[in-house]
Amino acid sequence: MIIVTGATGRIGRALVDRLDRHAVARRAVVRQPRHVAELGGDVTLADFADPRSIRAALVPGARLLLNGVPGPDFVHQQRSIIDLAAEAGVAQLVKISVRGAAPGALLAQGQHGEIDDHLRASGLPYLILQPVGFMQNLLPEVSFTDGEGRFYGSYGSGPVGYLDARDIADVAAALLTRPVEANATLTLTGPEAYTHQEVAETMTAVLGRPVHYVDLPVAAMAQRLRAAGLPPAFADDLARLMRDVGDGRWADTTDTVQAITGRPPRTLATFIADHATSWT
Ligand SMILES: NC(=O)c1ccc[n+]([C@@H]2O[C@H](COP(=O)([O-])OP(=O)(O)OC[C@H]3O[C@@H](n4cnc5c(N)ncnc54)[C@H](OP(=O)(O)O)[C@@H]3O)[C@@H](O)[C@H]2O)c1
Image (cartoon, rainbow, N blue to C red; front, side, top):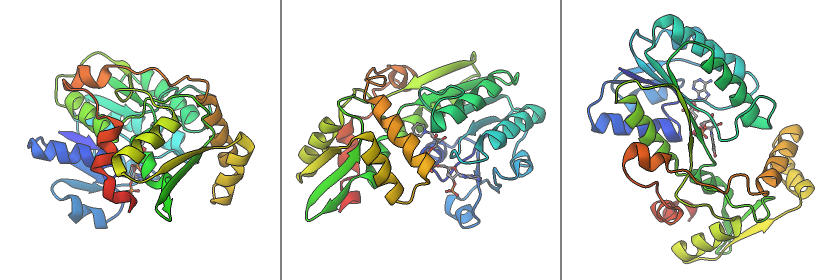
């Protein structure tokens, strides 16, 4: 049995679809009643805010995908679920983390760093997947006005090896359906790194409509994020994170997706073509 938390998210939904296509026994964990019928099959209603509700979905010998969204109580919740999974006799936990996770790092990287360390010390067999930024982020970030697309950041000329979240689901599916292997932390990237200017050029070429990347000083980017409604401290840290990425720290790519799935990760052009109607 493979138990998938965050089953309605960008990774979880693709993973559930893939497991269903291959008739692999799975249990989807969702928090909203409307998703029970939508996903169908074996679905448990549970909320990370009540870790015991997650515990009720767990069975001895199961493999667990732990996925969720960073927030104020994220570290406590995910650590509790790891402890409950160990208590329940889960055979292996595969956790979605983030590239650069380390205690004390900015935003999600800091939170994941604390949780990843907890998992490593838990005694549970584990695999930690540390993906770089998702191509799917472009869906809400690029907006079109008068036929021209724009997105904003403080990345300068630092390239990023953006990854399609569908590839993370494919990696998770492969790992969760083969025998439990040695604990490891795996960095996942797309096939090549792009500057944000190159992302805009690729979108322009594939969509046939002009798309512009607008690079802002970090203070102006933080102000823009605040104006969009993000909490001030979060907006400031996010803009700083963008600036940090500008030093090229995420410019290298790994062959992990190819090694685990047997095929190369999806290119940015493929992602854009597959989602072309999303920006209309
Ligand atoms: N976005 C990126 O570029 C990026 C890069 C690297 C790593 N990551 C990491 O990837 C992980 C997933 O991010 P994502 O953007 O893919 O998320 P996502 O698509 O929004 O999926 C999150 C899932 O978690 C579920 N969830 C949220 N709060 C819950 C709760 N209290 N109880 C039960 N389920 C809950 C959501 O359910 P609902 O449908 O009910 O909301 C959804 O199914 C995060 O840990 C993030 O830090 C993201």
